[in-house]
Amino acid sequence: MTTTKDGETNGTIGVDDARVARAIFTLRETAGYLGIPKSTVQWWAHPPRGKTSLITCFPRRGREATVPFIGFAEAYVLSAFRRAGVPLQRIRPAVEALSSTIGIEYALASKRLYTDGAEVLYDYAVARDEGELLDLVVVRTQQHQFSPLVKEYLKRIHYAGDGWASSVHLPIYGRAAVIVDPKVAFGLPLVSHGGARVEDLVDRFQAGDSVAELADDFGVPADEVEDVIRVATRTAA
Image (tube, rainbow, N blue to C red; front, side, top):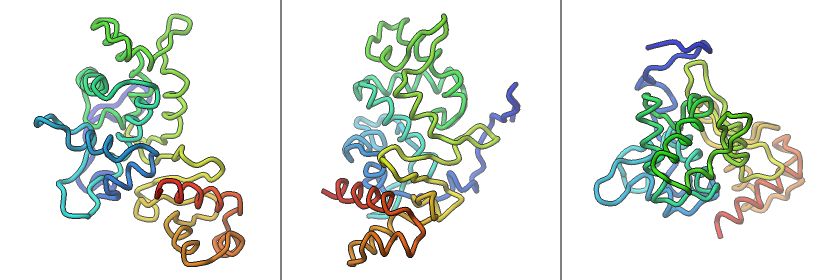
């Protein structure tokens, strides 16, 4: 294990680390919480023709969860690339370039993606005339930076001292601050204000409780409860 100039460590994440040791989400849940089609997440996790998965996941076991937190963080970053307009077929070579150049496992979930990734992707795109990938990067004062959309996504990731993602603030909610943290609530999404799990709010609402009752019982502002229910209703449709 090595230490960077910023005091972060780059090496491996232990197999017993909560971020990789257990699955939190199914592919469908991953897609729902990221606001993207399940087929896209399926392609990242189980690409055709024997290609390597783009996100970390466990072997399929019926309907059990297969995506650990670190895989969810990787899918989150890929969703930012997708929203920036990069076609699916261009995402794989971009990820491979990042992984080989940065030189560490789980490169998409590493803080080095935030600090060095734009430079790597820009150089790769120019060298191979990959015009779509240039949509990920802007050039300011002779420095390469991620586009505003991608940068905003990366700012929602909190990185631990070892340099890898430790929590993600989900972007699909408008008012509610919903985070995924493998150390809290077994990694299930929860609302920061009040600490209620998203699934508990949704279950109670579907059972007939009103927004006002939920806000009072869980200590979550009513407008944030409404936001959680709105997103749950939309993703279930």
